[in-house]
Structure formats: C-alpha cells, structure tokens
Length: 221
Image (tube, rainbow, N blue to C red; front, side, top):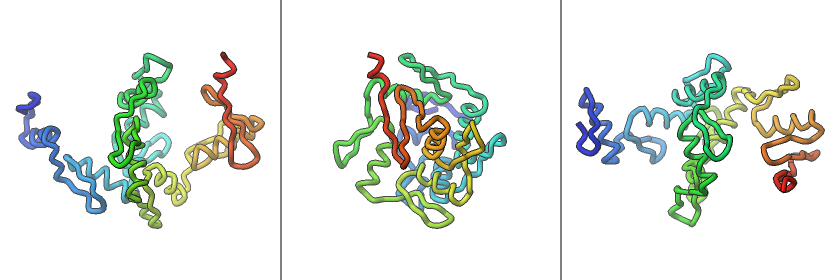
C-alpha cells in the first residue's frame, strides 16, 4: 500500500510505478532529447514523435496516431459522436474531460503555465512548450522521411501529409479534399461567394491568401 495516498496494488511492480507519481522519479530517458518519463509506455509514445511512427489506425476512416488513447478519443468524437462533458457557461461539449478543463480557462482567464525566461503565460501546456522553443531554438520533432525538423508537433503532422498524400479535410459540396483545414476553408468560400461563417464572426476571403474577420457580436448590441 502507498503510504502517501492509500493506493493498493496486487503486484509490487504496479506499486513501484505508482510511487513515482509522488517521488517524481523518471527513469526512462529519451536518447534524442532531454525528455524523461516515469513509465515506459509514456517514453514509447514520446519516441513516436521523433520517428513519426503511427501504429494505431482507425478502421472507419484510416486516421492514424502514435497514441492508443488518441485513437479511442478519435472513435468517440468523430464516429460515435459521444460528448458527455458539458460546459456550464456556454454550449461547448467534448468527449474528453481534460479538454473541458482547458476550455473552462477561456471563461476564467486562468493561465497556469508560466515561462521561466520571460513573462509569458499560457492556459495550455502545449502553448507554453511551443513558446519556450522560441527561446531555445530547439526543434525536437523530426520527419523520418526527409529530416525536416520543427518545434511544433502539429506542424510535423501537417508536413507528413506531403509524404503520405493524406488529405483528411473534405468538402461537403464537391469532391475536393485538402491536407490543411485552412485550404479547405478557402475552397469552401468559393462555393459561398468568398464568405465563410464561424461562431461569432464572418471571414471574407480575398482573391489572395488572406481573410478579413468581422466580429458579428458588435451588430447584436
């Protein structure tokens, strides 16, 4: 039994893993960056960020991910439509409890993640990690196909589509598909006369790459 919180386990190894939550011991080290983990499974998921490997695939649409929990979340949100966690201050719903916690910071303004090199703070840890890369110049995410490196995991995901040809964003009015959502938004605007509607605002796409965003809430006052 854990002397800190009373947790019990049938196997001694399970108790040893649990105790690392209290001690902060992280014996599993990445050999490509300074990441370390308390559990081997977490290190394995981290290593996939360096290699670009995505062994878990959705049987419905072909979506691939390096993390089994991400696949589970994908199945619930994209195919089952399950969203049991509801915001009490707006109509936001999500399939993930942690996403609701992050969303609530939009209402509270809380930014618990602080940069130790400047006065920047963020409501999401991922945003802080991206910010800190500006200070260090570190680009830990690398493409296994061509060596492209980036500080942002999402940028690597988008980049990999150049190699795979994947175009997950589909137009519901024709057979167009795109590798990036912004490209789909521009395409859909052509169907709508150059205008795309978002919650609370309207984007008017110009002939070039840029858009003008109009806040519709001003018209409601």
